[in-house]
Image (tube, rainbow, N blue to C red; front, side):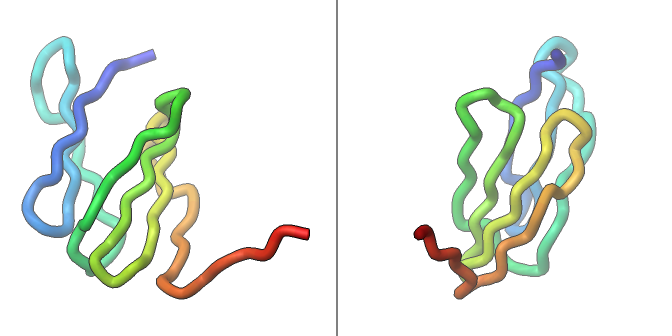
Length: 79
């Protein structure tokens, strides 16, 4: 498994840097809202990015693709 360092790049992008080479690998860009926070799952496979407008983008860090976007105000109910 590759190791990456994640860095907010500007207001709307996340730079993915290869830890071994310290070279940029790619940029994650998913929404047109300012990034407010980021959190990594315990297994290191999913990155959650919260925006200033309340949306959450879940990234699969294995293939660097968006898993899902949870729009602001969306929620689920547990039974």
